Image (cartoon, rainbow, N blue to C red; front, side, top):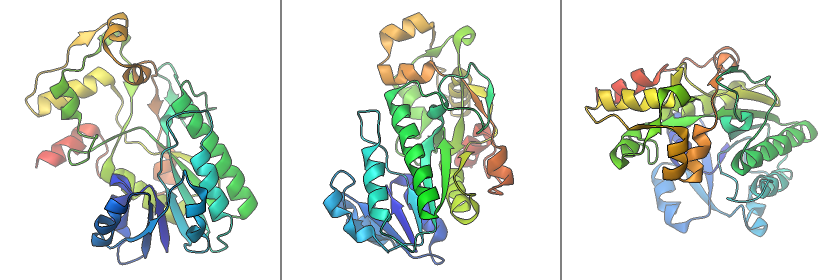
Length: 289
């Protein structure tokens, strides 16, 4: 039995992949999502990670858990993960737990290639909360005898995913950095990420971090140029970093201040995942077929 915590787009894709093999339960804080989950063959459990008293039903339910719920929007610690682990500590059946973290835990790497042995160096509160969650999960795994796998996830894309369609940003006219100041970004197609989650649930090693990314090595501006060319859209404006600071909100700027090229060797060798969309060009072209 699989418990999904944070059953949004990726969680629903995972549920479709494992349907018929596992019974899937999903924790949701929204009564409005109950029928949607049931329609997908998922058993909904009403509960809220911000209200510990609603989590008691999680004890003893599942053999495996997929934790995709984001931390709260403020603070350095991820209290939501702390509350979840407190509830799961009373779940003697639990043997595997996969957590959807972020590649932002590495901070700015100056464009270096980065594998999972690199020390974390979060540069934002958002990433610091993820580092806190990772540490809590590793301690939990060791103390409870649970195999915990941390998937460090970069930008997720798919044309059928809310917030994952890069054409939306192009339509807004959001600029990108000039080539001389541009940063490397990393990507994973939503379907490949769902498959990575299932692979980690089946084959993840204990207390192990895995970069869940494709093979692309693209700078941010080149990525959006590629999208524009594929869909016959106007390429985004190129601006200097100084200009970007006057035109973009802090969250978008934070992504322009970090450059790294993730290495996905563990994803392929340890989880034995064969990417269906090895590059964003292939993933986007497949969406247009």
